[in-house]
Length: 183
Image (cartoon, rainbow, N blue to C red):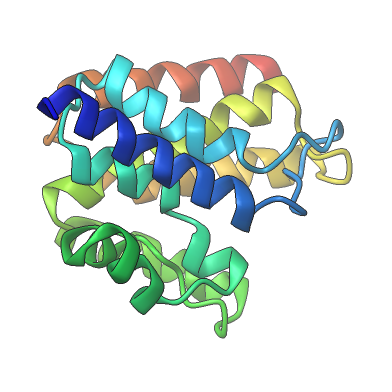
């Protein structure tokens, strides 16, 4: 099999796995879009905005919330997708046993120490979240919550900058669009 077919197969396997694991989840937006749209968008941003071709990063993008949000174990990720994918997914996984405020603080604190691959994944994740904040904001979020989310995202990404200029620029554009949308 040629490498392109292998890459396509690996991506489709990861997309299928993520879709199955996230099947009953919805995004926080007022329209409650299927959750799987988010990891697909994160992988698409990495590939088409960031120019990322690394299969480990793209597969990890599709799986980046499975441990955190679905009860998938790191061992399952490793058995199905390999050690490198497991490590990258774990690197961007928040510990849900902690309070939300603490998880947010830790994302800011740990961002500068992430691997270059994890930094790119984190930036693409925040771009996707900011786009959702404009397209389909959570109905129960106040204007202050939206503004606070944008400011927090900027603090996280400040520690991730410099690994992919195109992603940095797209993040800045997403911040600007979110601020304009919020007035």
